[in-house]
Length: 318
Image 1: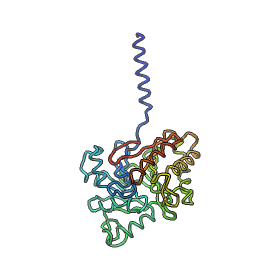
Image 2: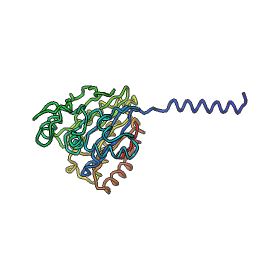
Image 3: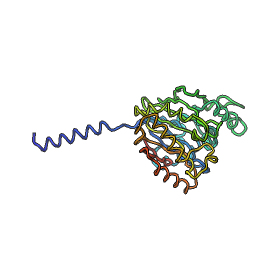
Image 4: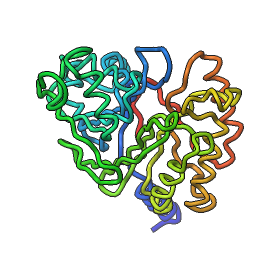
């Protein structure tokens, strides 16, 4: 074998080894809505599915129809809006019952197909009593006030208990968050085989909420970061640092985000968050505040985090 042939063989072997070591994606994400605030066409809702499947769960449902249309426009889906809604979305995980997280679910319920809505007990009670109650809206659930139409199965999640997500191979565990204490929001730890994603609904920092709920959550997921099983954390940052703590109303700023993630790194080990995916959600208009918020996160990112700002309708992988 000539020297040149040996050289080519070495290059091929090195390339093959690098390719084989390249981490495969475990999840795909299609954001249907990314903002907090007043833009009813772009409120919190994220479709999550195992890679190479069409078995999506919707993480919150502030915007649904308009988000699906945007995703089709961006080539994330090649079927009709109705088919995505009725066939691709297998269910909904609702973090809390504020309208900017459930309005898309409510409005689209007449056109939807039968599936499961998952929420903790307090959240489910609010949805049954105040929305699907045959007064503000028809009861499309299978329990609660009025006449249940039984389109949706309302499944209450027990905190910390692993629950299969129907018609997918994923499971979920729910954990409590403080969102204008004592009001509760929820974090969802979603598992696909040996990989995980963590999604947080609205949350204030422990220091402001006088709570330990975030630290308790970080304690649970720290081993998953150590083992490189956690593929990313969806976490809200609603306001720039100029927002006073007394006017946070159960939300985070860049300062509070980085402080909380330092606590997570302490639990997971120094350097464990370098290159780790942090997906920033629930940015509140106006645009100048969002731009300021992004610049502040960039300047304060001393952990080497990979910061991802989802775009409505644009698919990405984790």
